[in-house]
Image 1 (spheres, each protein chain N blue to C red):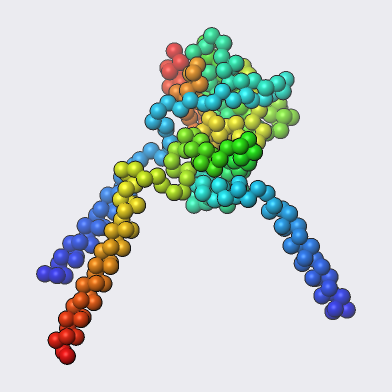
Image 2: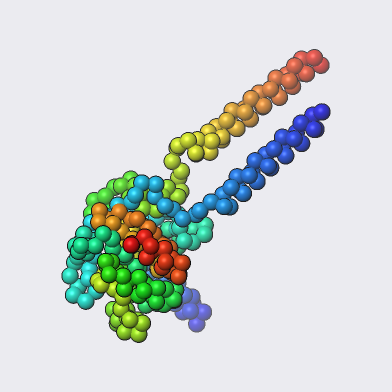
Length: 130
Length: 171
């Protein structure tokens, strides 16, 4: 009895896997692009994550645009012209975002210099003791 | 001396952050394109006949058309409907309704119940056409010039204030 139930369970489990695979089997490029787009009417979600009417329409449009031969870059540019730069997650490099892009680099160099200084001081100290 | 210096440093960072937050608090969040945004001359299905219409075909002698995105399932659309009607009564204006993700029967019922202010109704069954307008959802209203440039854009239901503003703009 238990064995039969177990078999049934396994059967249903694999059936489930099979169907869930089919449900998600849409153009992976659409998902890829949708993940890089901010859903403008839902807080903190990407277009890929959201099921709002806005996000659904965008996903449909992306697949239409891809089917008619537009590249990923074309789609981003099209949407930027309609909704502004805010719709893409990755900010452009311009005078407003320069600090954003360069600050991590500066901090990295600054941190490196700090470590180097610390090491130098330690070395000098060690040399004194020896 | 050292403690004082780091204290001032931290304080400066906090003030800097607060200023940025405060500034963004009062900023207008709606995206208004810097250059006038021109819509592509896309073709959209007409509500009654089902024929494809190009956007430029919508213009007669009018200087502007108004495109109102609406849907029968959208509650704010019911609120703004009387204002849309009032605006549509102006002589030299064409009021275009863009029926957003709706069923035809429901849309027809909506019009029968509240009246039809639209000169032409277009269908956007999957929401992709309104993306060309840069719309977020329903209701939204656009004033569009002959070159298909978006001259004004209202996100959300039109109120009395907007109605007066639109009437002034058109005249």
